[in-house]
Length: 71
Image (cartoon, rainbow, N blue to C red; front, side, top):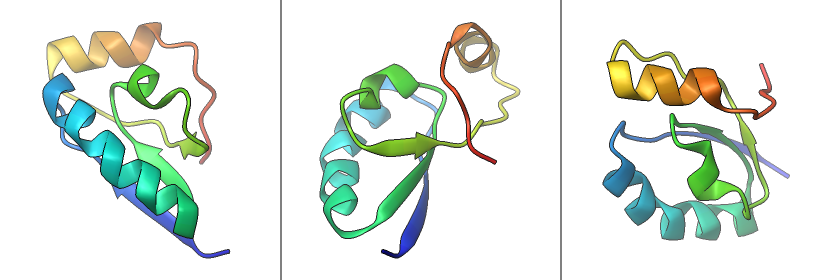
């Protein structure tokens, strides 16, 4: 199966809207997702790539997340 890296925008609302797109892509690809809001995608078969953010709120969210990341 082909792999696909998706880097989402930094806003929570944007990530909620991206869910449908990511869900569709999961049917076609092995999806690696770079997002500061991992919890939005918990029920989808994606692998998370640790994002780097200079934005205060997103950086806090990334730091407190218990997700495991793929390099």
